[in-house]
Length: 243
Image 1: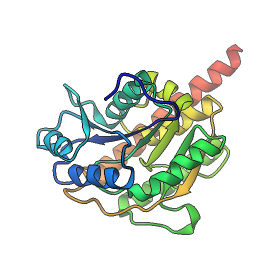
Image 2 (image 1 turned 90 degrees about the horizontal axis):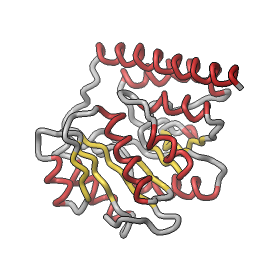
Image 3 (image 1 turned 180 degrees about the vertical axis):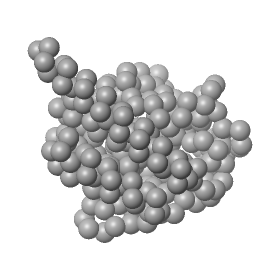
Image 4 (image 1 turned 60 degrees about the vertical axis):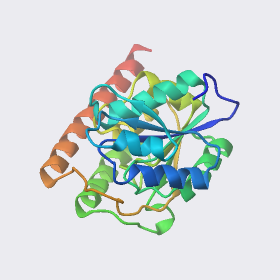
């Protein structure tokens, strides 16, 4: 990957942990839809063939020496993208659920709208795409939690199909929620008075393997994220009082 990026350049990042069965196809799809756009797979210390499959498909790979979890993995990609001078970064999950054909809409909205983040939403436009029962319950729960905090409804708050511009990239390269980042990241944006928008996208069943989120982990996820949200609110209110 070049040491510097061209103006208005785009990097696709693909966080992946033990996605040997899917990540190669994800990279191939991305290169087919967006020829010439660099694809960076961040391998979160996988113990299967994720790294090899990504390279064989034509991606650059950032291998992490230790397993950091999703938030740490994504932040590593953001930090590298910021250091290399990219203006836009779009995150695509390594399990094949995100359709690369939605990326041009996300990028165009980032470039032409006054938004620091654009979320590919399975519910925007009233379509309502594939999701598991556990995730559906979590989405409904966090819609209710986030609405009074953000001042508007977020239809798909757990979506990882996300594009950011350089302003958000600068913030997230320095500080990013570590474990379950999607929802806390929205609160971080609110603290910065940044704006976001949801656009319709297609979500598919994962291409291989299975999700590690069980019913017990879903409960832990909700408690953990709630704590993170409240900590961010306290930071925001504390900062306002000191001004």
